[in-house]
Image (cartoon, helix red, strand yellow):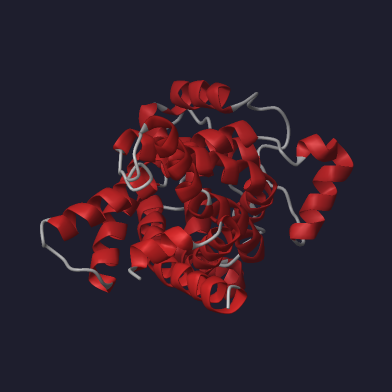
Length: 315
């Protein structure tokens, strides 16, 4: 059975777990750049003066500053929280993509080959829908992760909230704001993740299909790498503005922003339109390898899920 048909036979639960495990492997490598991105997006927040201090000049310099002030452990702040978040987010985003795509295909197209059809609009809808589901599930964890990564005893950027651990963060928020507080900013998460997910897998599948059909690259690691690289670049361009808004809405302690649209208006008014691409360099340094690693790992985890389900549970 081909790799493609094998992935189509994996259950929704198998796809969820395969996607989550693949993303956890990727985030281990990319979490330090995620931390840098978070701080670069917060520095100069609502500052009208363009000469305001910018302690983080670029991703590499910023990583060096963080390492110097906070050590190796400081560069991996929020990692455990990121693991749980990635399982929820990418488990849904990668595990639910195919079920959503197949369901929509069956509704729109007729015939025995309806499920196999590749329609870009349907792929975008399926990608956005699965991403939104993941954003909702993972929102409390991303909230904690953002605040843990923004906190620094050496350089204060943005509003500072100190959590000793993921559980401490969840406990503090719940005790002060209740269950609703754990989902504060979920609307911004939906916009950000929906935007990224709407292009990630559709670009990946489109590029992969074009490379194979035009006999540019044959099936294998090189094909996955090339497709993932282009997909990662597309995600970075589309998602960065929404990512800046999400970071700021999540990091606030009071009511500086009433929501993502209010944050958008205030940010552009105070800092200009290019503020929406703060941390873009770090975004590309993070999202490109993260997408490459996630989708490349997923090719293997989906094979493993198929093997376990088909050879063991169905034996």
